[in-house]
Amino acid sequence: MKTGRMFRGFFVKTISFVGYTVQYGCIAHCAFEYIGEFVSVSFLELFGQSISTDSKRNTYKSLFLPTINLQQCSGPSMEPTITNHDVVFSERVSRHLCRIQKGDIVIAKSPFDPKMNICKRVIGLEGDKVCTSGPSDVFKTHTYVPRGHVWLEGDNLRNSTDSRSYGPVPYALIRGRVCLKLWPPHNFGVLAESPNDGRIL
Amino acid sequence: MKTGRMFRGFFVKTISFVGYTVQYGCIAHCAFEYIGEFVSCSGPSMEPTITNHDVVFSERVSRHLCRIQKGDIVIAKSPFDPKMNICKRVIGLEGDKVCTSGPSDVFKTHTYVPRGHVWLEGDNLRNSTDSRSYGPVPYALIRGRVCLKRKKNGLTGRTSSKPVWTTSPKMKCYHAGRPTFSLEIILNHTQTLSYSSCIRSLK
Image (cartoon, rainbow over all chains, first blue to last red; front, top):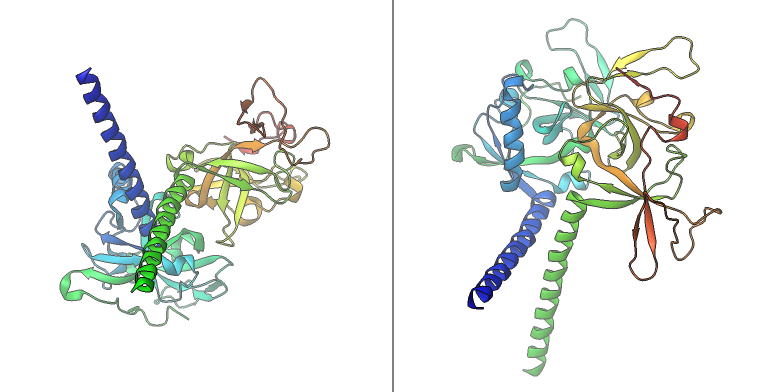
């Protein structure tokens, strides 16, 4: 009889613990979903495109990291604005209110891997004319960004796989706008403007 | 003094009411986000499988576990309007060869679905804007997989005030007092009449 009561008490405590965990987990998830989240940038890939040997590691990270909301985006494509091991804060409000503008740095889901995120700068919004040729090309080619899409480019133009290779990205893939750099402490603050003059027309 | 206490009591009650609303709102949001949601479909692009004003249930688990397969009907965010959703059938997954020409064209053209994308088409091929016009859709735009459809009332097809339903050995029946209702399992691609003649994905 006494052990029965003990088990029942233990069971009730476990259930209420699970209940509280689910409850506060949901509140935390909604806060990260609608307000903002911390993002850590590190070298997952070399050229902004996933290498097959890394696919299992990336899957592991994408399974566990969202629970602590520390997401990783691709490597050196945003240098010098964002470098390896930087921690940035990305806010979600602009995305939900459709206030993303040209020149903003955004975190978006990769069009080629739904479990990976990419961190690029918005060069053009829907209807804008963007330059698709490189700075060293003789003949300049342009294209117009279709409705509901954005044109993303990394700041490190020589080492970035972005819209110049895979085309415009649907706006719905954007997760948030990077607004603050938190680490390293000497670089704390708002992020710099694009170092590539003339890419934003 | 008494009015001060009244205001403080009222303020505390308001704060706790807001707190409970936020709390249960977040739990409900997470349930809809990770388990499933009811969706009201409009438009003719999925006829006869899903008609205008049908209510379907789309589950989110398959999408998060990457278990979406060819032949599934999915709800996805529109590539052209981030606030709109589209309801189409998955014809091809990444790497698959899909037919891009119409059934009446003389020369058949094909394309391969790129990595991380899917090829979506509506069941009503003559009246559907889908991947044949805007190309393959990134997998990350998919929100959920449609698995159940609320069946309309009998021969007239009208929905009555009480959603009355027909039974079948394959359908599940939920009796929750009044009204009683059952949900029809969404037909897979081998059963849909308009689809049995041509599955457009080729290996």
